[in-house]
Length: 536
Image (cartoon, rainbow, N blue to C red; front, top):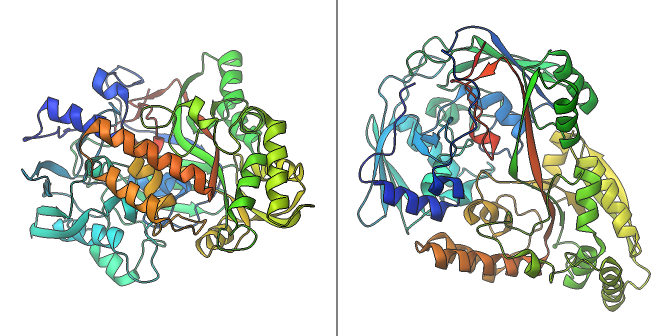
């Protein structure tokens, strides 16, 4: 593969400066290498067998927030720029051969390859890039754009010529390149988007693999794109995902060698694999950018009362949640992933529900409920998605926690399509959901989830203070000042209590020993193209 490195005017000093602002990780500054698998000469051929726990609700990477969608479509598309598959701390070109930031920081101009074609044979040009990102940043009425907030600084996009596109900004945006490099910002064909309005039913990309077949509840397959514009890629003949909702069955597939790649296995299974069949698998782990929260509908009584939301927050034992639901694999956190951007663990413990004295927390919860007019508690409904992972178990756990302060929650478990409609329409009292970011950067962690117009602001809370702090940190180019603003943003959001994050998950991936050319990223959704992967 011809990797397109960051080009002029980016010096290494500027790149490291911007990486610090983006929050891609300390490893970027230290030059930390990726965890690459395999050093032999790559071999061609073979099918990479993967496993996933559920069906995608659709094929739309712009509206969707579940990784089930990227499992299907990521390998079928390209992006303008991307996180380097082999070095997660670097941003490199994908369709873009180079790019230039204006001296005033208010535009980025990208030059793109001239030989890329969509899988229907249509040439890919700057018109497709412009139309794709115009839809993302300013979607037509009735169309959801889950990551719209990440392009809030983009005022317009110009197709300068067939292979040059310029993003014009209304303000500085330190996180812009990090946003564009994430796995969800793919380039779709203008003619399909114009005809259909969305990509929910079509997978027409320019990527290394073409969509081949989908049997709901069984599997989906992709085949090698013989017209791929990157020379000598991909190595594989195709990908096949088995859809296996049952965790123990997925682990049995790994043990038997039926699958080569298992993204998202539980920590207990990762430890069991290392213990029971270490000669057959490689196990990799990292701290993920995925949080398990629950959200209260602040537009619906009684959750429109901050005292009730505080009481619910005080009822939950975060440490117990991490232990029971994740076997301790992860870290309790607030609205920012613990680390570079977040407030300290000691300060977090001063906010509702995060303190270690659980009995005192619940006593305060009962006091607040009585003050709000619910001395005996109340009944409510807790909705959750029927899916693998912690969704249903988390709902059961939360119902038990709420009951300890007199709040009786009736569970309503919904299939994925119904659940996403429920969340979109805010048709719930309390619901479990997921915060899945592609970077630890505050733009990713806050924009869609907590700003007034955020596409994933399911609580319905509208806070001018949060909006102002979000905008201030988003355009702050001084790294130290941006951290201060991000922490104040987290404090303010922790006090609003529309959404409560239980913890951030640990992440585990298992591969068979025959898998080569894959590097684990902190967010695997940024590296699902598999064009460098080969089988020995």
